[in-house]
Structure formats: C-alpha cells, structure tokens
Image 1 (tube, rainbow, N blue to C red):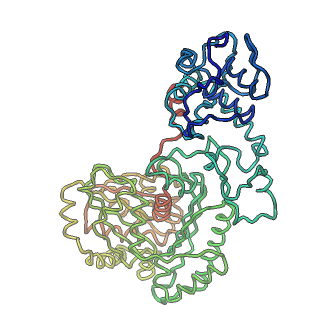
Image 2 (image 1 turned 180 degrees about the vertical axis):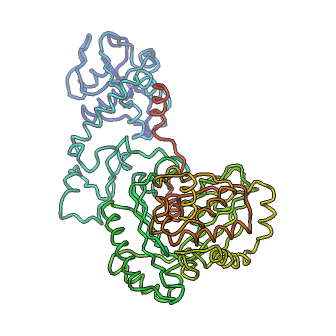
Image 3 (image 1 turned 60 degrees about the horizontal axis):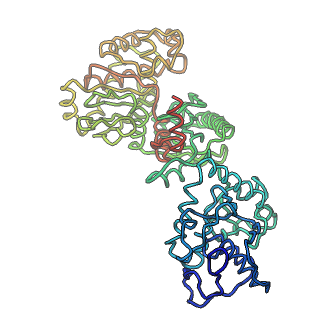
Length: 571
C-alpha cells in the first residue's frame, strides 16, 4: 500500500471497463490519452495518475505526496466521484490539492468520451454531465455562445463570410458547396471562377429576419412574397383606363400610386364592331404612362385586364398585340363572369354585416354586371370570403357609352330618358333567379351596393361637394328616396350645367344620364330601401385576389416567443 492508502494500478486492480472494449488491460498511448481519461473520469486521479505517468516514462516510483501538473482544458469532478471510497475502485478524495476549473456552457467531456467509446452514458459519467449542467448559469451560457460565434466567425472570415452563423449543417459534416479540410468558405464563395450552380451555401443567420410562422403556415410563409412588395392592377375598360399600385398593410392595402384617364376605347364599337384608330391611340398613350409608373415603382406582381370593348370588337386581339409591341404591357381580356367576381372582391368590405343579401351592380362603359349575394347562411364571413356566396349574376350588354350612342347623351329629354330605361330593362328579363331575389328582398334585410361613376356622381351631388372627395363618397349610404330625387335632378339639368358641376365635369356630362337610366331600370325591377356607394371596383378586386393568393394576410404572430414576452412586459 502507498502512503495515500490507495493501491496502485500495478498491483492488478483496475477500474471497470465502460468503453465497450475487451477486458484486457489498456496500454498507455501517450499523455494526451491519459489527459482525456482524467477529464472524463475514467482514468485515475491524484497520486495514482502521477504514479501511472511515472511508470509509463520509466521513472521509479516515488514515495510521498505527488504534486499534480497543470493541464490545459477543463477538469470535471463531481461530488459523486469525490465521495467514492477507494475500495470501490474510484479515486480517493483529494480536496484542497487539486484546483477545479469549470468553463461555462461547455459540454461535459465525459459525455463526449462516452459517445466516442459507445458508452450508454450511465453511472458516474451521467452524474458528471448532470453536475456540469447544474453549475452553469444562464448568463454563462449566453456568454459562451457569444464567444463561440466570435471564434467561429474569425475562423470563417468574419461576419461578412458566406456562413456567418450556424447553418443547417452545423451539427457536423460539410454542406454542399462548402470547402473541406479547413479551407476558407468565404473566399471560396467569392471566387469569380466558381459556378453558381455548384454552390448551395446556407444564408447568413439573421435573428431579426427569422420567420415566426410555424406549423402549417411555414411553407406558405417561405413561398409568400415580402410584405413590402408592390402590387399593381390595371383595368382598361370601354371608357376609362385605370391603374392602382398598392402595398399590403394590415388586413388590407395602402395605395401608393393611382392613375385614371378617360380614353373612350369603345367609341363606335356598338355600331361598327371595331375599335377606332383615334380611340386606340388614346388608349395606347394612357397605357404608356401606366408602363412608366410600373417601371418607376418597381412593381413585383401585377394583373392587367381589358373588358367589354376588347371583347366585343372584331379587332380586339390585334389591339392587344399592338399594345404589347408598343408599350410592353401584356393585357388579359377577361370574360364577364370574371369581371363580376372581381367587382364583388373589390367591394365586399362595404357589405353590411347584418344583411341577408346584397344586389351589387357595376355600370360600365360597354356592359353592366349585376350580382346577387345570398348571405343568409354566411356564418359570419366577411370581406373577400363573401365571393363564395354569389348566388347568381348577369351581365347586361349595355353601358353608358353604347347606350348614349344609341339614344344621345347631350340633350336628354324625359322621353329619351324613358327610352333608355326601357332599353336597359329589356335585358333584365334574362336574370335566372329574378323571382327568388324578389322574395329575398321582401324580408327587408337586402341592400344595394353600387360601384361605378354613375353612383359616385349621384353621391357627390347629394352631398353638395364643391370638389369631388373620394373619402366622403366611398361608403356613403343613400336612401331610396334620395336616389330617385338625385336622378330627377340630373335629368332636368341642362348639358351646360352638368359640365360645370364639379362632381360631373365635361368628360362625364354626356354619359351620366345613360348611367342613371340603367340604375333606374334596376331600381324599378328590384326595389331596396338603401343603396351604398362604392368608389372602388375591379382594380381593388384584382389587388385583393393577388394578395390573398400570395398569403400576405395569413394570420401570424410577429416576433419570437421571447420578443412577445418582452413586449408584454414593456406594455
């Protein structure tokens, strides 16, 4: 027995083999091997370690206390190992002679050795791991992570390197395209001779830009466009060319830029079935201005549609090709059903929440769409979701342009006005569910919703605006008596007075009464007590559909769980 009361390993007693190897005595393989064993708790400590080191070096065994040499690295010694009796094969307690040094947030070396040797992590090695984690504070772990990031960034070329944080391959191995054998990944990625197709490096980690969407929204969040992207909608109608550029915001969007010009593209189509050269020139000039706005704003996604004038004209396809060659814009000629659906999508936010039904109408230049929204079983649906409740729709082949061309729009007598009303009413007989709609209106919870220049003009005149103000007009409620009174007032107004009215102007003075005649035909067929005015329509419907398809309004909670907790604490 030695002076410390512990038998040296030379006497044949050795610790249990936990490495999964055979029971033969292990031979010494140098100082590094012994240091690893001492760190993991599998090798002898204290005087026994010094004796083993001396025996391996060929030195004679010394009597008395042996001073331990300082080694680099962390030494993990738990209370369980210190309290182990010498007779159980563990080292004798040696407090006061060895200095324990812990490094925060470092994994226990015993765990690493157990993994390498195939150990299950039980016994004293598990105690060592638990003891090391228990003594590490949260502050120490954060500090260790910062040191690790700085060291990793210095090795990989700084934060501007290709992988300035832990990527998907940080658990081990080499990511595709990342240089092996200690090469600098940042320099390899910046080399001009490297092909982009052969490199798929992980992006730099950015804690502020990590997507908070989880679960079923994760794929949609990755595929969705950024919320700061700009969307555009262009509507080339029979009378107007309108452009709207907007950015998603909240549960809607904010208009960034808008453009509108009366081009009267459908002028003469009703009689000649062809687009006129002067009308096409006006439209192409307006479309060129729209193209410049789209390019200047950097719009990421858009939809450009053309409606009745291009549908009805024999040379409509030729005009579309000319637009593409001269302006670079690819117009899409939509059918009447799509036009009706887009009108609903653009005005759905103005539907009364308590209504059982809505008669939505869009009086255009060459056609007029009427849609019945049956909302008796909508179960609280609002906004864009109301497009699922379209019960029936009809597209009348009459609009303000072709109706005014047939009956005249400058000097309109009461007889001419009645002739226009009868012309429009004759097309309402084709509505398939006219009687069912009449029964629904009798309940008293159905209102009208109009989107056109006709109803916005009526609202502006009713409000007595000195200058047209969209903020006051959009969403205005008009009683049925007020609508009839405004129609009579405009019918009795001479052409010159209509031109001077700030809500009509010279561009609409010869068309507004044709629109009033179409509205009067609808009112006589289905009488509702209220009418809501919408200064919105196809463009807003296009933007709504595009943004909904891209998932920009998908419900998500911003920030990580810790950030949301801090925000609640600050509140």
